[in-house]
Length: 215
Image 1 (spheres, rainbow, N blue to C red):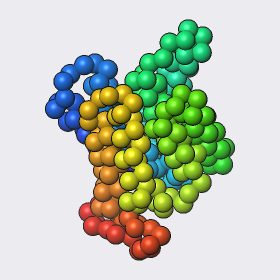
Image 2 (tube, one colour):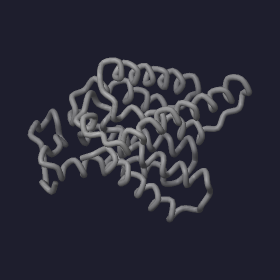
Image 3 (tube, rainbow, N blue to C red):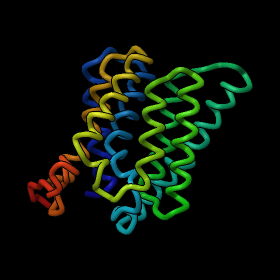
Image 4 (cartoon, rainbow, N blue to C red):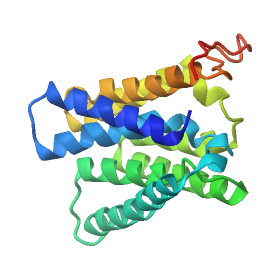
């Protein structure tokens, strides 16, 4: 399934969740960012078929997220290291937007860069005592070197992602964050299950793909 489709599904999940929670601009943006990133994060695993199917719009979106996220992250980092101001919601959004830009890139350099970002997140999470950030860092550092539609497309990865979402919800004290994170990740696996290749939900316990061919 194309990355743009996963992105749209994740965005829809974020919009739906925000409709059932008290509205604030920050929370609205956070639900959408977390859900959209979660819907794409399974494809942080190595070179994927997405890379060879990028249209002009997809390429523009990739560059927008990559560079927009980098600028956003630089601004949040400046506030933290220079002005000693820390905004967890802004940092969460910045990290996820930046990482979305890596989903459809491929190659050794790309994988190495993503892993470096993951290690940096682990350090930041340890330094700031943020367990969700440590978990995210572990996932980001590990995922690029895995076979596409391998371990990141399993119930084990889904459970791990749900745990990250739970810790993020506890950190931000915003109800529903765990739900949108879990639902976004689940939507990716379910959508890929509808394709002819299917998904190895129980790998490596059960190595055959489970599929409901639709596309």
